[in-house]
Image (cartoon, rainbow, N blue to C red; front, top):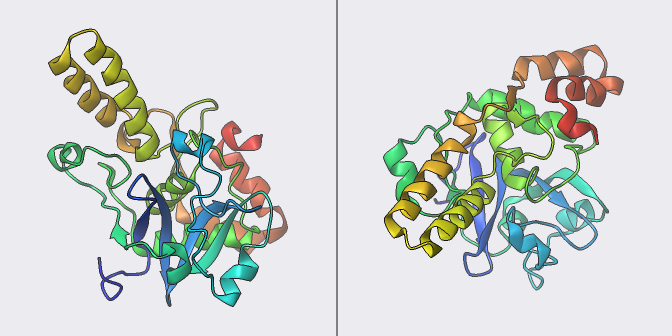
Length: 247
């Protein structure tokens, strides 16, 4: 995807470290990207089990612009806005695809590049992304299995959140890794073809479009929240999102 082709409301991502994992965000226009990340020297995360071993998924030698350098000076977990150059950190720009067919979905052996779920209109996507900037970048605690950068981007695009605690989130990277682990167990039992079937079934079943534990956060409700009382916006959002985000 070229920079000229990217549009406000697009879910974009960039591969890190020799295509081992990807960082996701929402392009909001004017060369800016809103994304869920971590401070304290861990500016982006993989959204996979690799976060147990990789301290920082950002390019350590990539120089940030002055604005983004200041924005990244925090500890904890936060939704923030970065320029496109700093978001990509020297990597290539890719478009995450929505409402793809099962054939197209499974044709990509790696997760984290598409979903069967349809996207909401761009204006709704931008409302969700900007809402979390208005509540000081809060989007719950970062968790590599349950709540990572891809989960945030998919939520902005669809309004869908996994509300059940101790459940995988909507991240295709995480769900594909879990499906692959299950398939390998089957393969180790000498059932190679069954293993392939298990992998395909698990990926489709765990896609956000098939998840029974999701809630929908309508963009118009977020607009109403900000218009009524911004001081309690976070608490009202929590009442919609469910117990998973309540700590």
